[in-house]
Image 1 (cartoon, helix red, strand yellow):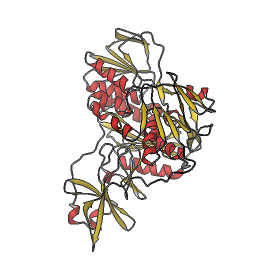
Image 2: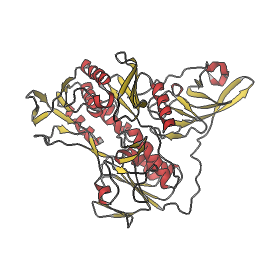
Image 3: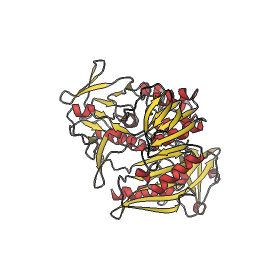
Image 4: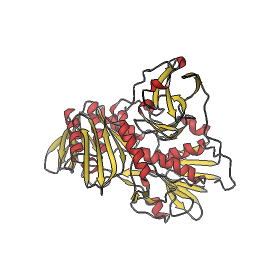
Length: 506
């Protein structure tokens, strides 16, 4: 898991510090008793909040101040320095706030303040009475959570085809699959959260029809639900290839917690695994299976892993990291057939395979939107406010194509989906807030984590700063003289700063 150290360090803030203790920075980590506290200089003020991100414990003093907020260097969660509120996913819980007292040139922190809830929102005459969210992934959960956090008290229904509640999907191919994240870490919220917040969470419930004129949805079991606002967060589904033997019980795709759980169960008796696909999910799954002690082969039609996203040099380096851990790559190849205990590659090579994971990408789930007459273009087309071509229907997450830069984009990033869900929630309540967040994702490859900000589906120049081989680099992807995206290893703050620059250009 991508986490920061939790050891308390820095000065005892109850004894006071001066501006000189900041040593030229705007952030200073200290402690009050055994609690880590972050001091932040905002203009002429000094503010204090908890020093650890509530997502995975990232050290906020290693982050970046943006106005009156601070961003975590690990996964770019954003917190208010005045209220502690989690302003942007992937964190949902606030950090604690502390009272700062100034005596002469010294600043003292002694008193922890109570929770500071989201500012109260008065009900409006045109507020929706009922909202239905289709999809229990990142976007759907984040929208439901934000609707309640903003104080909207109408009827809220969250429908999901999966049997598991909203969970930490990035971990399915990382620590959960590798055995480092226990089952209890996976739900984004415990079961009582939905009851306490009056969210009607219906799992194993597939929506089969949307009637935009009547403003209803129909589920597989024939039930109809009415809505004043509808959010489509149907996500994407794994691509399934017509490979002979792909229906055998040792063959899996990896999208849901049930998928990951089934793969883990299979590893109990498996000694060898073949992963088809050298994208992020395929490589992360390969690393997780290797961590469980399986012999792992990666098969891909590409010349280099991740080359289409990260370029040749970084792709070659990532392949080397996996090979150093014992994984074997078969590039420029595919699986021709699968049989019990083995696969045959397209070049005739035979590989032992007690377990096969097919990770060759996903496609957005568009059938509902198409049947409802919504505008679709390799995704559900939305305006800057994430509203579709039909008033009152919004879309967010992997399924949404939104205005971005000089064109449009649809990306399959967890953090983007969560933040789109949060913005969609605000706009379903009439906020008219454009979605302008810079896309961000992270990917773990054994001991190396890549952070990527921006969106560069194509480029005409790659610039490398630092040393890729030493896992200390920033790789920028440029087109027509503009930097579209940046990938970093070991340079978390640089990724944050580039994200801020890209946001300023939006």
